[in-house]
Length: 144
Image 1 (cartoon, helix red, strand yellow):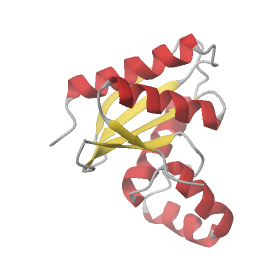
Image 2 (cartoon, helix red, strand yellow):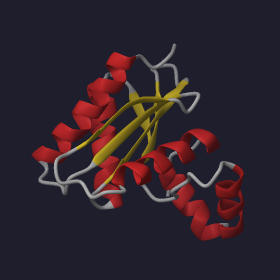
Image 3 (cartoon, one colour):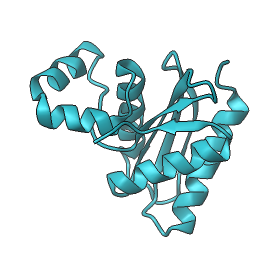
Image 4 (cartoon, one colour):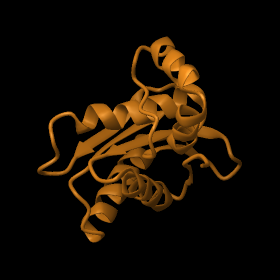
């Protein structure tokens, strides 16, 4: 199964709806397919200038290393040299903090990733999970 444009758009809309409902700061949302190609992106009104770049780096890192950015955050604390080397190897687009969530189908197959930036990392991750859930898919944020 591949991530459809309609699913990516649902994820984006669902994440923004969650952010608005929870009173979060304005967020940017980036959805990538399993190849790392851009499927959808949006930024709420008032989002600061580089939030979309940060959101993209969260999603890029998750797809490139096959783990949600919560796991990358743990690896950054435990193995800083690995994260530095991996960041260099994938061209610099890796943000090892929560908010980059893998998208999986019901069978667990990787469909892509969503990256969100703009609020706290935990809130960014919660918005990603809400958007993925709205699309009827499963989010994999990684583990502490």
